[in-house]
Length: 223
Length: 125
Image (cartoon, rainbow over the protein chains, first blue to last red):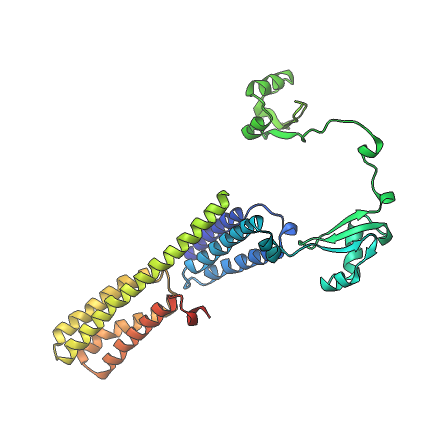
């Protein structure tokens, strides 16, 4: 049993390493090939755990190979448009100028039900509101509505304002984030001065966020 | 770019490991083959003392190599060879045809294991 236990720990570490190597991606954002690799890796990992007579390396080598190839192919896809097309395919335009392209829909096997469901998911219940729609390589539908149905923006209203980056977490659970502080060019003195003004200490801060204009928000730890 | 470099390094490492593992297996196969030949020759010459010593050396060597091989090869394949190797010292003293059969079985199974690790088209398919 101890062999199975230790093998499971080794493979767990290896899986974490492989997933980190492949990079941060949510399941919904995975390309079909990446999804296939992820499923394949999880299947391979089970073999040496179940059968202790199988060398652990028969699991380790394919997992590392698949994860490495995934990284290399992603890198090649960035470098070459042709590789990108082979790996991920191309987005398919199914509504252009408000007209449904049925031929394209048949080609990518995208049913009317899929289309209507995706539109509903984006709060569009009438297909005639759509000017342009694309089925992305991940299978998600991107929609551009006709002018009268688009949301009013600040630009439409001619409301002037400054574009600034969103606030960043500089203290989480009493721990200062030096990287975030560096990005925001904040010094420790500024943090300490601000916290002194708020009559609290770093260790008592649950969350502190600061934006580029030095506007901050503070949540104290609950006792 | 760090990830890409790491991926290339890992692939390179695996290729290197595969080559080294294959060389080790071929080398170990050669060592066992030599001992098998020695047992066979001594046995044919009626030198049962030398044959017995070689058989014991084979058993001793196999016990050591088996551990190394289990890193690359499934236990199932190695168990068959282990049982054949265990019979050899007994057959040497009794001097019968079964010795030849067991020695041939060890040789053939080892050959199959080594061949199975090489990236040849029939293994890949």
